[in-house]
Length: 170
Image (cartoon, rainbow, N blue to C red; front, side, top):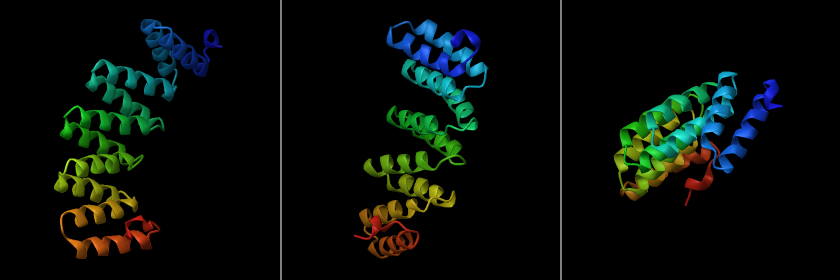
């Protein structure tokens, strides 16, 4: 139970408080659970700060959550930063997430590709590959194909296939 220091119960109760539109009580419960070491509470606090527009505090909490074993909040924060028009901040967050998960790097690479910022997309996809994510090769192949370098696209597609990702072989 939450009164007995059960952090999982605190997080559940905080979610109920949020749903009931009592954000102050939810925030207090999340903070208590986070101080007791609950990384899900850190994730929820980071999400709350994102929705409030306090991206500095959200990033600080997201990094703490990632160190506790949940890098997904860094992916979410990187995406929010990118969509808010802060590409340098989103890249910094994605690189911070890379030791835990390369998903943020690949997601930003996809967003940059969609925005036709091919140099940035390629840089991010290469960073994912360098961090050990072979799926970045398929994204690199697509970027090269879109920029007219079909020879390099084919080479990267073959590399991706050799690493088990056949999606790049079109």
